[in-house]
Amino acid sequence: MLEDAPTLPDDPAELRTAAESLVSLVKSQALRIAKLEHELAGHRRHRFGVRSENLDQLALGLEEQEIAAAKADRTASADETEGAAEPKHKPKRRPLPDTLPRNEEVLSPGEACGQCGGALKTLGEDVTEELDYIPGRFVVHRIVRPRKACPCCEAIVQAPLPSRPIERGRPGPGLLAHVLVSKYGDHLPLYRQSQIFERDGIDLERSTLADWVGRSAALLEPLADAVGRHVLAGQAIFADDTPIKMLAPGNGKTMTGRIWTYVRDERPWLGRAPPAAWYQFTVDRKGEHPAKHLAGFKGWMHADGYSGFNELYRSGSAREVACMAHIRRKFVEVFQSEGSVIAEETIKRIAGLYAVEKEARGRRPEERVHLRQQRAVLIFDELETWLAAQLRKISGKSELAKTIRYALNRLPHLRPYLGHGCLEIDNNCAERSLKTAVLGKKNYLFVGSEGGGRSAAIAYTLIGTAKLNGVDPQAWLTDTLGRIADHKINRIDELLPWRYAAAPA
Image (cartoon, rainbow, N blue to C red; front, side, top):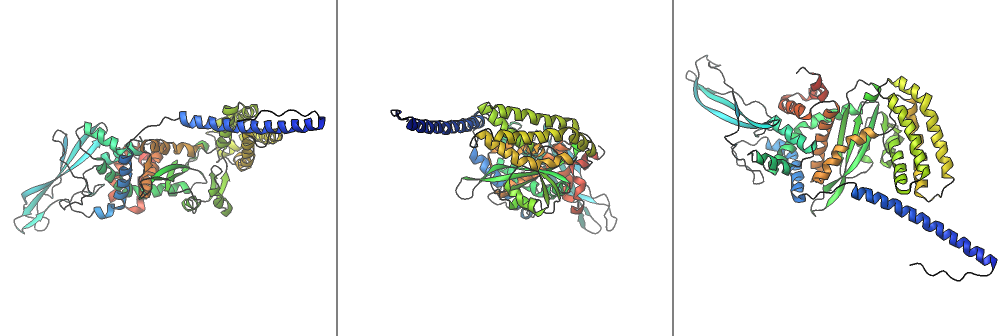
């Protein structure tokens, strides 16, 4: 509460001192009011700009934990026999509805014995049913393998079971691809998918789907690593990260992990390399993580002002390119909360730089450099000079002053884009690639463990890269999951999405 103003002194000197004190107090309070209004405007945008949704957090937590466990146990689980007793934590297998259409494939060992040439007689047959998904409907593939005996040498022969994505598992590659894309591409948690399947008469528990996702992620991990190698081979990449909640073991609470993205996209300057996005998951935001991810990378890196990247810059392995979008965003926030004329003018000047970039997009590097030198350099130089002049005219404690200082600190790190045609004015390429992770975490809220986060990063890598190349991720993953088990690891690059797009139908 403000106290009543004291009686003003009669002495002119004392009156001047009191007036100066009052002016100082008013300025201090005005700055504080402006700061609080700026913070309030930000809180309102965050609170009312995004609608919250209540979800079954217990089911989501179990879902992510089961995915991580399935990924870790894939190798050991592959050795279990189909008729062996399953561990108690394994989901029970229920019979497939008789109403589902069935495609039957007969794998016969032939009519003659391979050893003596005698005629084979049929003793019986083994039938393996594989539940698959064709977009819009389910279908059951029946793989029939007759067992035949040779009366001459008394040998029993049978065709081997072809390799499948999950050994001794029921799902076909199309169903696995559908579950993966639904969860990580369409942001549909597994417990919701289970409910959708139930409407089609298919009883697939959430725990079953989680097991499939974890095993599929482990199978596809070498392919995600190949995408990472492709990204780091570029001369310029885009890097960013976003927080994601991870269930802390033991206490049921969550801790903040990070999803990192590293993107290579040379399309704006007509580069020939296919675009790709490589995601990684870590349990915190320490600078050691990007240093490990980018070990061996040599080139330019578009990024925000995160200090964890500084070691990369100091070592010389990465050369920094700042982001104009981050600079502009801060001026937009000040303008929206305060209506600042200086912020508005800054936004207009930045728009001039983006107008040049709009014209430069889709041109060869040398043409982009020429256009920027002719038109953008002058705008850039004047922006720096103008911001420095405005900073001297306003209170150094205001939000606008903080924003101007941030801009003046970042602009020198953005200047390299003016002289290199393979560089961009901002880091929006990486920010766009993180949208899928941001949308996903709003639906499933958190990952159950570090293993679950890594599985998510693998899926985001493959689905995101397929989309960047104009490839239907579900069709590509269906084809890849059907082939990868028998594919040689030293030829894994043949399965990358742009190879799929270039292959004949």
